[in-house]
Amino acid sequence: MKILFVTTEFADFAKAGGLADVSAALPRALRKQGADVRVLLPGLQKVIDQLGTLTLVGSLPRRAGIGPCLLGEAKARDGLPLYVALDPSLYQRDGNAYASPDGQNWPDNDIRFARLALTAAQIADGKAGLTWQPDLVHANDWPTGLLPAFLAWENSPIPSIMTVHNLAHQGLFPGDRRGVLGVPDEAFGIDGVEFYGQVSFLKAGLHYANHITTVSPTYAREITTPEHGAGLAGLLALKAQGAGITGILNGLDDEWDPERDPYLAQPFDADDTTGKSVMKERIRTSLCLAPAEGPLFGIVSRLVHQKGMDLVADAAAEIVQRGGQIAILGVGDPETEDRLREAVRHNRDHVAMLNGFNEPMAHRIMAASDFYLMPSRFEPCGLSQMHAQRYGALPVAHATGGLVDTVTDGETGFTFPDFSIESFVSAIDRAFAAYADPPTLGRMRVAAMRCCRAWEISAGEYLKLYSRLTGKPLLRLAGTGGTRAGAGLADLRAASCMDKP
Image (cartoon, rainbow, N blue to C red; front, side):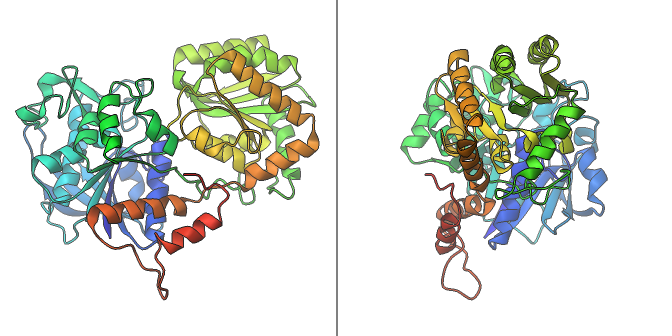
């Protein structure tokens, strides 16, 4: 089965958020199960600089105001095949995939991402001059939203999947840009790409894709409601009625393993957490927190409105008064950062914040923390709570999206039902109660550390979906009568304690 996986981020080279981790992990898990997966990326400067050998393999034609580009081929460190859309005028800039170093979105983002989507569509339709052609294309989030549309407008037989990692980001551009983007006149309407007079890249993907996936089962249901549908609930509800939406939970990356983590002074596991106590004292010292006997609450997150950090700021005094401390690592919007800094100023010996992101420190805070605060307003899947669980930091999480699917209240963490300070503090109270009862804390910590969802399980679910859309059979295990996405998936499920629908 040949799959073209299209993304703007890839953790090996260019990362702005969780999409990069998924884009690096899922194709690799699919390859391990026998699929021929190739990843298409934009030729960002960071990507070009780190690839090493890049071979030109094709030249792709223009469409409307989207200029031509070259196509490069390379391999990741483990041999994963990569294609790279090459246009220096669009991609080789400072900053990340979406914005300049000062955080401003590139003004030509519509053309930049339309070119990426068009490149994928042209590869799928055999217009790139390659000897390889996918059976299915897998688009991810709004920057690739025009990919299913381009395939539909060309009457391509190649099926497409659109994965929504976060519905809040939709890729909206002025309606008068539709001609430049090659949008047919008849497609600029309610049954097409139009969204309140604008061109919506995400709506294009949702409307034209053969199937939609989200990164957790609960989020797949939530986005069909007005509360979480971001203006697209009607379209998504119709898709869901036709069984056109599937929620497939993300997996846990192998690099998040406290037994083998090179960033930890003393590795540990569920049977012996001595190293966790060592890390706790080291983090307190490095962040200039006062010596204390109480629990440490960790946060490694984007410090933005979605993540509910305003609740953390409001609850900080209560946590400190109860004998707890808070260690925060992240970067975000100025208003949220200012609120957290105010909490630090009022509790300087017990609340610390490192503004920015540092991979080693992220691992160390996870390892040091007794509890992990994740009061997100909404959370499509969330990876941080799974990282925290693997490191024995019990999540205190809002019962929404993927948090519902990964945190079992009272067993592998604590959830609170209402997004309010009262509900949040109630869950924090239960965390303090568990901390005061070592047998309960130990039991929950062991359950959390052993409750891991392997990427192979997610890959098996995607393979079943790919098979249904392409009509190709599931891949056979070498030397057996089973299938990697059938009997093999059952074996993987039996080995995992996170087996939720």
